[in-house]
Length: 430
Ligand SMILES: Cc1cc2nc3c(=O)[nH]c(=O)nc-3n(C[C@H](O)[C@H](O)[C@H](O)COP(=O)(O)OP(=O)(O)OC[C@H]3O[C@@H](n4cnc5c(N)ncnc54)[C@H](O)[C@@H]3O)c2cc1C
Image (cartoon, rainbow, N blue to C red; front, top):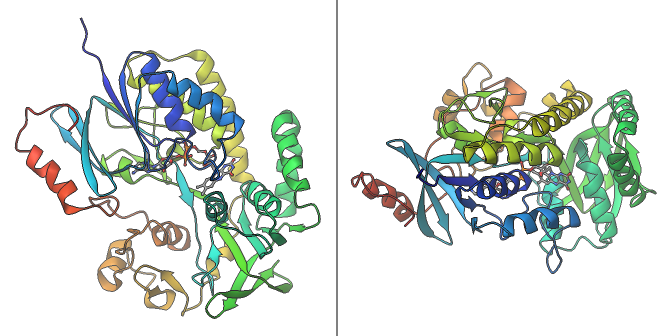
């Protein structure tokens, strides 16, 4: 009789939920580990005292119908190879835990991209998705004057969410030019559901100006942001506001993939038709393989989950993935970042906010490693997650190597693994 495969899925967003469901339904013993208090990831994060959205509920019911073990509010901080298996090291409320796996599915999602501009570190300047996450976690924006500046389809749901919650959304600025946005909108006739969704979201802030080809030039304030200047490159306008939401699209979370030495090309994890990375038995799905939205995350998750459990590929899923990948490519073209965004920072603008490193302190001839050694850039609590992605855009610096722990963790969590390494025959979860 063949041994039951132990699959660990890291991330409980749409991709992770689909992967865990597919692997468990195929007979694998599955553990899904997620930092969130409940499965759902970014898009399906439920607001406090409310249920997950309907689209999420179908998937969560499917996951709950399996025997998959779900570890909530738990962060994976290290993965080690032990013989032909993996030891996944996780921490929850300061307590370490190890789970041994035959196969890993990385479904770690994406984060927002922040580009430095004067004033971006002022209090009440937050990410676009970040503002939505705050609101869902109970922070009230009711009556607040809000400016939203950034890029991509995320601007619409966030503006709608904040407006429905009683915020005064003063302006939404999309950096992509009108022609790109119009071409993208026109292409939506092939996806009537998405088109209807977009129209519904726009109607929630119908009286607010949505400007294309417009971006944030700077923010001013003292103990908090007081005003923001928007520009289209020819003219500027300054708006008094209480909150500025500013971010420029998403970047894949590839730290754990890079820790495992998986190939990462152009910021995205490289996978084959079965979603396997360049490292055997390590699969990857959803945003870490490239920003593609929820439908692509779900189908890649299912393919990865089946493959991790040892089930062969499905033509039907592969065909759906191809369609969603084409849509993702058209999205990427439409919302490509304009070059003006790369020259917003002045010499005094902070680039690395953990270590207070200013743009003027960086010699553009350095490598990322040299900048780290000379200025401590990227060595703070976020370990370069914010400034690293920005400098990749601004200077073309590739991401530096990943160190353990990939996120702040207690030393006793890490010592647990070192001790276990001296007992090579130990198996199973502890
Ligand atoms: C801030 C933000 C807000 C967004 N809001 C929307 C929206 O309103 N509408 C929309 O259409 N799309 C939104 N998106 C895009 C959306 O996330 C994707 O389209 C889609 O949900 C991707 O699914 P995923 O499973 O790949 O990633 P995600 O949904 O991001 O899920 C990844 C999960 O992995 C977990 N994780 C990451 N690292 C670890 C670790 N080391 N240990 C344990 N768990 C880990 C994260 O906590 C997260 O729960 C948002 C993205 C971001 C970053």
